[in-house]
Length: 288
Image 1: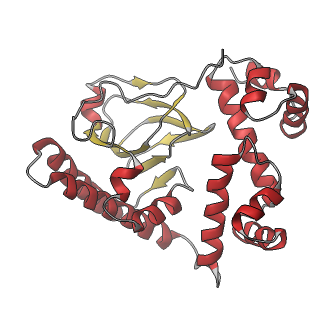
Image 2: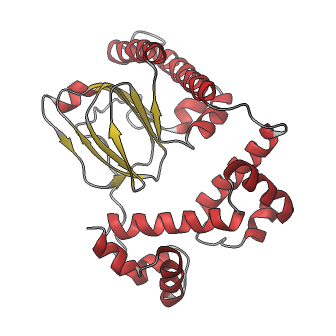
């Protein structure tokens, strides 16, 4: 029987009847209660924002390890696997939300979130962090006090938070090339399609048909924005999900192959070995 990667709520997540599975915000110090937090590898079916005013530890997201520092933010989208070691004494905020909570307030927020989730880690300048922290402090107060209309305030604050994050991100990046908004939109659509179709669609032509683009157009977009071919991007995602399954579950390689859409496990093993330099089983053993 196929074992799923554990999907978890944060420890002792409060049950709110109105927002139980759509939005929550908590102070990090209330979660830690003076103790270190050590989580096993798991994934969520919601968005998670961990904003640290003061922090120490490590946060591994999709097998990339980040050192936790003061004034930083981690953003996880549903399906990503992560492992958090957070030291006692860390302070900040933890937000959890479902997309329908955010999008019901403002459809433009979907576009903001799509741009932001390309990065999991955001370091802040001191002045930039002050803006973020004041928004979160206000949101936590609204969430706890539940004065009439508080849900709308929480949605509005979340939308403002995403805009502020985008502004601070764009301040640090170089100006985009001409025509980038269209190219960016198509790239985001391509990445979203891979995430939802990778088990059945492994060929570039299948995606160009869905996107109503020629293979030349899609290649030009991915090369310009990511310096990768469409085929490389598809392969990278399949390998990422394979690694998630290998390291976060005890499923047999044949089960994982089938989960990834390979009828023939030996074909999957050859594919994995070609790109990773070792068999799936060896990769699993060497990563423990």
